[in-house]
Each structure stands twice: as C-alpha cells, then as structure tokens.
Amino acid sequence: MSNLPVVPRKWQLKAHGEKNVFVKSPGESPAHIVMKALLWALYLPDYPGMRVEVRIGDRYKPDLISLDSQGNPVFWGEAGKVSPDKIQSIARRFPSTHFALAKWDTSLAPHIQHVAAALNDLRREAPFDLIRFPEDSFARFIGRRGEIVIDFADVVWHRFA
Image (cartoon, rainbow, N blue to C red; front, side, top):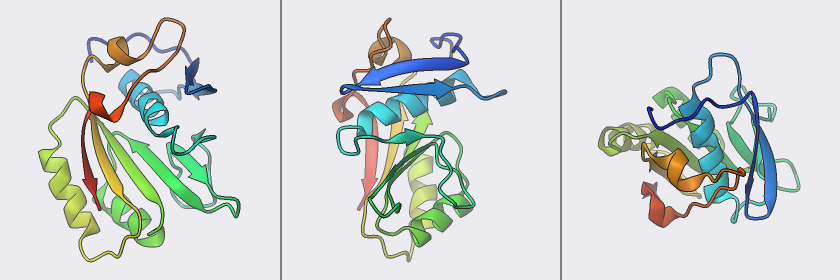
C-alpha cells in the first residue's frame, strides 16, 4: 500500500462523465477507498448512476449499488474482505444481480476457490466477477484532478458465469 496517498475524508472523483463523492469512514483504509472508486469507474459504463455506500433495506450494505426502476439491485460491488457466508447469502438472494468483488494487490487463486465454494450449487442468472487491482493502481488510474481512467484490460479478473 506504499503507493497510496493520504485519502481526504471527502474525495470527489470523476469517470465517464459522472462525479461521485467518496467519504472515508473512520478506520477505513486508503486501499478500500481506492478500490471502491476504481470498481465504480470500471462498471459505470454498464451501470450509470451507480451509488456508493447506500443502504438498500438488506442486512448487508453494499459498497456500490445500482438499482432498477423497481428498486431491485442489478449490480452490487464489494471491495476488500468479504466472508464466504456474505457471498453465499447475497448470491442466493439476488440471483439476477451482477456481483463484483475487488481485491488489492493479491493473487486471485485462493479467492477464486473461496468464491467458487460459496457459489457452489447456487442458481445464478448474472455474473459474479473477482477483480485484482495492482499496487500502483492509484498512480496509474486516478489523475491529479480526480479523473479515473480504467478498463478491464488494465486489471486481472475472473468471471464466474
């Protein structure tokens, strides 16, 4: 995490013509904030209007969420540590929701095994993505004026269909 800046408490970032304010909670790591921001920018073209840290009436609060016109989640993003129980619970209850889980500068191999085990025997209608952001992500993808430029070609990722 040596390439990460001190993240301000409120950080306005831009991607794909949209702006979002990322609010750092007490004790939240800079890596977690950067992962949320990069995940937001990565999926924003497919899910415009995506929101950050908004409760949706579920026991779990997503890091990122995009809802359909009826208020059902169509995209759910999480950054960092997520328990197998949480993965299984969300994947089971929201089979039509595209789910993405971001990890910071780590091999995806053990996480692929954990996610596969959590998804085992679940009927899914939407993909579940696992993404690795490299250590230099802040310097590579976030400009001085808060503009984020990132694409799937820039990251290592795995899709569970």
